Image (cartoon, rainbow, N blue to C red; front, side, top):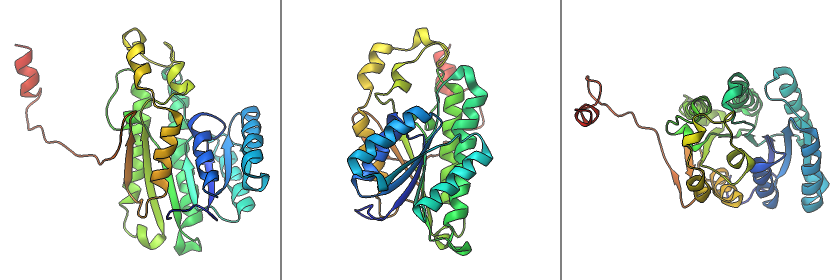
Length: 271
């Protein structure tokens, strides 16, 4: 997938608002055709109308879709395939951040991503008649490190990142014609980051709201990073970490701390 996305067909989840909507706008601006799902029918219909007026009604379609419901998600994906003819790019973007709804968050943020990835995998794989394609899964900055404020959310995003890059390492991935990429955005200027409270975030009294506000990235920056990732000549295994002032490709490293715990630095500092 090179400089242009013309003739590329995209299925994206969680596209009615926020970053998902921005990703759709970037894809459509490059000439892609998109089908997007979202659980919110009102917001989804409004986004469909807005983008259709901007890019043409033949290029965008909304489907109400709950990624936590396996049969409904599969049906929505098949409807998207039937509408587009073929899906070249799958973007698993749907997710929430709410520590008080941890079971739902796991189902949505991780199980939904696994399900969407496997649906696209079966559709795209060349050994079963597919044409190959790309799968981009949206993780988070806290999928690269730990956070005491959102431990379950962080856990789901670590899982997304590890799942996706593990698939990228699979034997025969090139023969199947598949590529996997991960986007890890830091705090973006959306409701997800601005409307935090003590149900969504733990230890909220310790969250430095003023400092956090200074690091919120414009949605447009996240869109730029997303488009950079999906248009790489070779995307397979790429992890793109996006901060308010930079974006860097990275990989996870296992650091050997030796056979003793706690680390010497911790032990000496507590003496």
